[in-house]
Image (cartoon, rainbow, N blue to C red; front, side):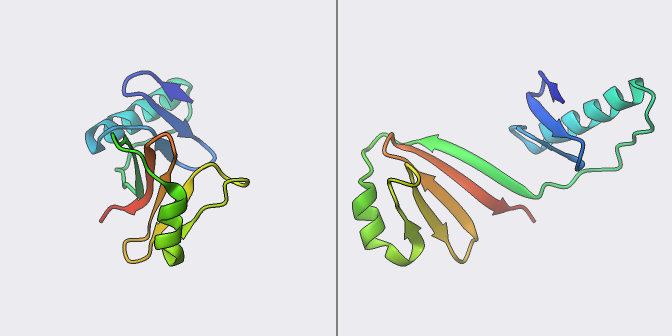
Length: 114
């Protein structure tokens, strides 16, 4: 199920929603989903929320040489151009994964929230 404001998507196989830009938007979206389910006459309650992981993306203004980055950071990176168009950089201590693309786009995934 999707709602337009805040722009999020909910999965009902698991009590999960994603796409919110902030913690406040996430809580608002969860309440809206519970209200929609209640209007369909199903018992639904909002008993609080917990953020498990965060995802971010950015565009950098400089070229990234993926082959060179993969070579110089070999133990932390994986770049197989035929399998995946981006370099996968795994930060071991923080358990964060960066997906770095030639188009100067980066996606950060797996950041845990305490």
